[in-house]
Length: 259
Image (cartoon, rainbow, N blue to C red):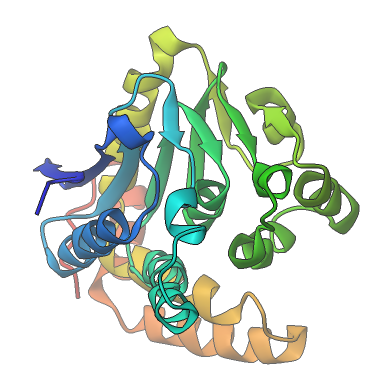
């Protein structure tokens, strides 16, 4: 099978690169399978503390779902079965236990918009555009609407999905769905700096924290607070929380014990 996704590790950072520029990194079945494999590999690697998701294309992060496959003659039941890849991937990222940075170095469109929103942080080049233009070709962004609605207000979300217009990185920042908008000359260094900072945090407490966010984001407030109280009590039992406080008081770098 052709390699459509690159996986590299360096200093606690796993870099997952969408690498099928000929298709503008279309999220077809093979690419999605390889992307899921890459995230599962990062999840299983004890040495990996943070994941960066990016693209090898010089202008496109990903153009989204494979429209040829959508309109193909494959039986509907097979198309339906194949669509499980999107929810599996989004849930895998949410439950990874490690922070994920989307390094949006090119346009983030359609299903890739949902992929970016599934990540914990988004850094974007100032030239990048975001959007879900599926409606313009007779499709609707069904799968990613759940992620859009959890990150963008209802009226603006409807505008994006129903009109199919794209927005600039600056507009995405104003909507609160991008953490930083960066000039091209600063982009790679900033992504690396953020990833390095994240890799320096306690992997154990980061996992507990991300798991707590993932588990409680859709709960009612009372249920969420009760679940978070239990997670905080669990955190109190770790050696890393004691080490972190001791290092702060002693003005030194902490030595995480991962227990």
